Image 1 (cartoon, rainbow over the protein chains, first blue to last red):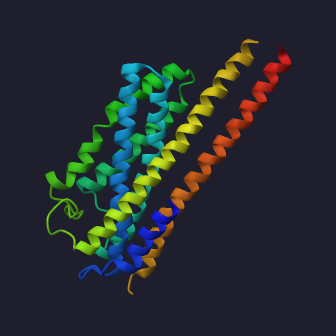
Image 2: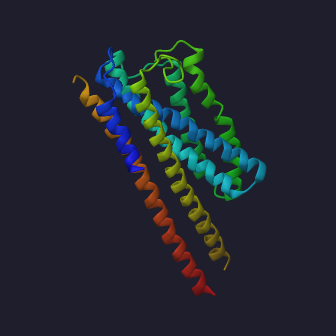
Image 3: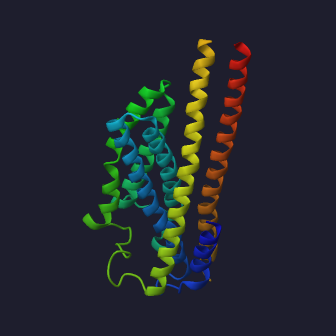
Length: 213
Length: 47
């Protein structure tokens, strides 16, 4: 994991060629764009967890849902913080209310509200059911974020990764390496966060037992 | 090397967020484990 992260950072700083129009600031792209894609992947995992709970009613699906939501939110936070740092030298402003930026901010707020909602319901079964329904509903914003730069004219750059001729081969290699390292980090964080939910469930069960005794 | 500072800040913020999050998950898990041990003890003593 550390090796992967180190290699991708080294690649972004020392191997990737300088972009002609934006110069060195374009190197933020190797963190910002893969983080965005990894955040969406985490929200897809959350959606799977939510659907899994609705169909199977087993706690492990709820644990997967909340774990992926929190990890996705961390990645989405990085996207929202690094984007403006790139935008200021590139556009002259930190923020523009275009479709991609606005839908991403809405996505961040929706998953934050998902986590806040969970703190408001004490009963674990009720909490899991309510958040599963809510999680399925808020997932609707994920395809909207992804499609926004394809469907509307935006200030945000047009897609360069899954198109031919968008990136030079060297840049593409560094991008994929960064994406791989961030996906591995996402998997590690979800696993750690899932473990936390397992321990929380045990603590809640013991607390009920202690109360009844 | 214009804007090198912006690049450094972006990477520091990015990796900083992940580091802080990882530490927060580890801390919350450790606290819950302590709770579990405490509850187990109180249940055994109550029996």
